[in-house]
Length: 401
Image: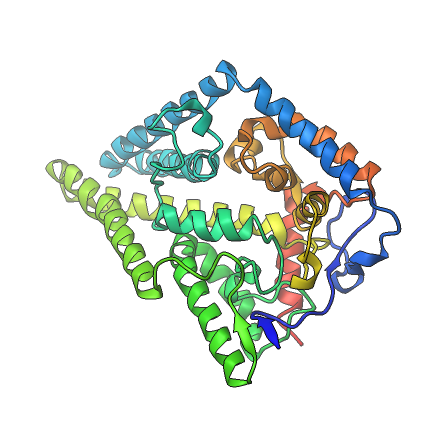
């Protein structure tokens, strides 16, 4: 027998039906079989969503280009202003202002700029300084590793057990169908810990998830099964090479934040050095906690769908669109939330169209929702508070058998 390692096949579990404005439903009561949907016209669903995508692609222009270039200028000015304020951070108000500005800079760079540039959303500008092949973000995760694990694996195989390593990030039980392990008792503590150091979890995720898959193959082979790696994982750098790449990026980031900028502050006295160092640390923690919260709201709240490899065998474009919608979750918050979350408050639209400029997601969201509702595909959206609260409750509830 040939097995795709990762998890037994048990049938897709998800919340389906009409739109879902959900906050705290019982996880166990949210799951239904994908085959329970009586009528789903996959071809029509795909055609309607393709039409939305084609309209946006055809209408990209100067307004979009101005948006991303203006945002990059704002982000860089926030960073410089924040660093300057931290040099004067011996005065507490200056330190607080510096932390706020530097946190904002890092959030904008990681969420709305870096993440989306690395998706290729702005490659059409043909600007080598805003291109997925050249962008290196303010994060310890190497760009090419992020693009492999996130763009190539997570986006292609969203919430498919055994394929998508982002399901619980190898630490958390986020689906009641996942087998409970004794270490899951500690996942509420791990949840808090990972939030504080999230960029390091992201940075080592590609290497560690690949090692976990190799371990699964080895165990399957010991059981006499002809195991195979998930699609897209059968080549690339070794685990040691990936760890080395991440370690090199960590050194560069640590040098920038905790050596170079404090050194620039040195002529202004020890207080300025300490202010620059502690301010950078605080800003990194703020960025980590925020990005952690946004990302965990994207696929883990109650009602998010989880799937098995058998569910995606021979998947048509319309079925792929449906799985992306069912496995993703939106949250509301307005224009500032759009920018600060990298427009991942429109996670459904992002997963349907990951290469469209993110500033267009709010524009197309009503049409996407109407299309999903008309085709009987759940459109899960609620306030940010309800969605993150749902995640916290799930982490706590599923820590027990």
